[in-house]
Figure 1 (cartoon, rainbow, N blue to C red):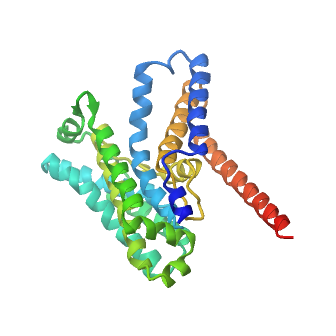
Figure 2: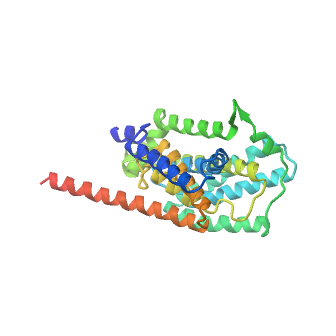
Figure 3: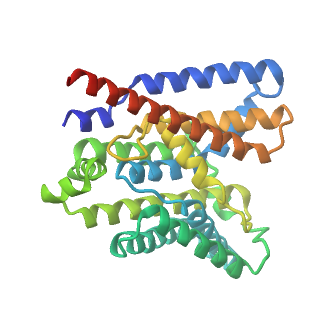
Length: 325
């Protein structure tokens, strides 16, 4: 129980370190690039964080459960195509907006069926689906972009409430809902219990299949919601849409303190991990580092964090062994 409480705590040392890192990196880039510290660039960083914040939220649930979905970025791409097609057919913008989450939820159920019912390890099953979904995107788009989409969805989702963009309120509500689910509902406790030990969770009477299906469904729905905002902002869909988001999401979530082995998560950590990545990527671009190296930086951060945690785990084990003698 202590571990479950710790997993959903609102403030940890890890989060404070991430916050400090964001501040230090911001100061460093601002001293090198005069453009970095402008309000316009800050707005760009926030805009570029919307999709990753939503996909990262779903990835947090999956990793906390001991799962993963490396196809989630392409799920967003397929959902974006569905939204784009709906707009191109002059569907009402409100209905087109709903198509994104619905498509993502359906694809999430497909992923759950492959991984949960097929009893395939999540990393293997979603890697296979990644190839399938990429091919589907190419076939559906026919090698061409969807571009010049109607502006109705852009106008609807580009509004502000009390001076704050609508995307902020949607993301805040999504995080609040997941936080409440983790803290106040059996679903949250069961999800983390499965992440700690699936076998023990089954013995405790937890419906592992239902919880895992729900987690993949929610993750897919959040990816679909991200697709809706993506289409509203850019009004086009390309064949590579979302292709790097899975790596970014995994890196941000792990940076934020969620265990890649399951049983521990931090929603505030995920937000800070996303912001750290986007600040780094934006700053590197402004100082002239080619965008190709953004993936290298993301992968390097992920490897560094996992290596540190593995080392810390071995040290803890050594101390435990020494104490037991």
